[in-house]
Length: 391
Image 1 (tube, rainbow, N blue to C red):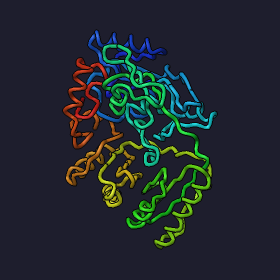
Image 2: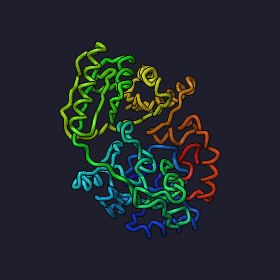
Image 3: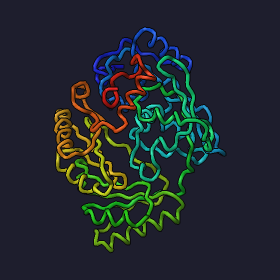
């Protein structure tokens, strides 16, 4: 495999262990020899964050892809880090259960990678993120020790919640090798309804109606020529889903909105897969300013798509083109001038290896994050320099 497009250079070696013990041995050897380890799952999130300072050893975790235990009665599952989300969902579906996460590229995204990035999709509104479903974690620390935290039952309240420390840390504090999640029953029904050309008042009225959608998405898409499309998705018992959709349509009529541009059937369904852009920025701010922020971002560049979750205040915008890096730099400056927080989710390696801020502003807890990195990985063995502030 050619790693240079994502790491900047080719690593000295790439290893593919098949057991947790082998992972620990690789990390211990790297730490003793002063080399850095780059954990690697499906590769879907490797263009997020700065280029690692020393990409010495790529640790390919695809050999750890087993479902260790599934307890349908307890509604928990334990899986190895290299298992893809699609693989896990297929196994759970036989018992009408699922893990309510919907990051992009579920057929390639691995459990370890999803946790390391805290990756999420449109269903964050209704189901939350990986942090909300994780109850136990096994990691290999920077010295090659196997560390276990949390448990394998839902009612687990003993000790510090150390597993959450690794969620979103980009593998800079430990190599995730196994995770235990609580599960949800597959909804009896799933339905969506969409409108185009909506305004801020319409979006606000639907959100104020307490319809409890699992997804609420405002979107512009240049490819499909969608301008301010708005979609609500509902999941649960069939009667509840049908009633929620009918109420949304009633509110729309009262607000003078056009008839729905789409009215999906009431079925059990899931989110679609989006094309992978060459650069993606995520902007965040107060939820009550989400519509105005969406409009401003949509006008700021020739984006392939812009997607906002009004209920959370997050807007993702993707650009496809040879000048993706230039557009990202322009938008970084645009964001800072407007005091809008952002994170660069995808970017060319030329930008990721430069001196631009891929996260802004630094989180209030950055000083604590830095001390944590220095304490848990003093030699910079794990993904050095990749995370916020080049931790």
